Amino acid sequence: MVDTEQTTSSDLQRPNDILEAPDGIGVRAWQAFNAMEATKRRHFEYLEILDEKKKNYNIDPTASDKQRLACLLMDHDDQVKRFTEESRALKSADSAAHTALFLYIGLISDPMQNPAMTH
Image (cartoon, rainbow, N blue to C red; front, top):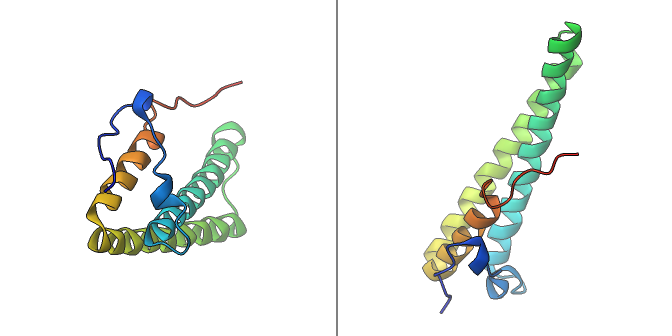
């Protein structure tokens, strides 16, 4: 049984048994989450670049910029669907593992626990 009492960053424990099981359903959900986060970051970073160009230099996005942004959004949408499917499969197969994974994701994703670094 997986311990689901992980509620604060001081108690943060990585659920290794779920995240590292060879070919485990938890591994697939975790990989899907990370892919979703990567595509989200890529989309937002490019959107921010386009917004800054407009704000600072009054340069509108080109057709190529818009196409790239649309592709990045489609990539992210695909990964959201994949994560949703994998997390549903995990919940169906092992609800305790699902809970543990989502507690871990919640803690590592909490901006109050992980403030953005600035230089």
